Length: 231
Figure (spheres, rainbow, N blue to C red):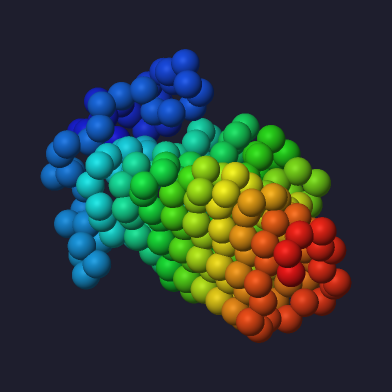
């Protein structure tokens, strides 16, 4: 998306030594994007370059997918963003995390659509040190052998209101917490020490391994909870 980044489609700037963080300036001009970034007039994303460009900014915004997108490096969430999937699919062919939500920032997902892991290198579709909210019938599909739909750390927070989570494991680490109000979780769930899982509704198809704090106020559990923590 050369109007903002001075690069063309599928030609990305070099990565910096921290890994696959975008090595460029934050976006300061949004004139080339369709939309205004509001709830009623979201920015329309049609390419991976659009996605990287918009997410790599300090502007809070609403974003809507206009086309299916494939990403090949991590997308860093560095502001508060609402993403309308709009029936589209994001495919992640990434060696680490698909989306890395930085501490102090948030990503809210709504609408219908899919997040799909390609290959076996992805560690997690979402690495959450900030806040993630999932709304709407979105499918989060990762490998049953290697991929995690969600990995929390650093006091991150996840609120699941809807969605279908497929993959090896959802991992709650590092003082973080997950609150489930609905949806279907087919992945096993690991609750490590000093972390919290709150279940108000929703379905858990696989086993939950609790070594931290688990509180249930509803929900359906198709397999027994294995708990060495507080439950």
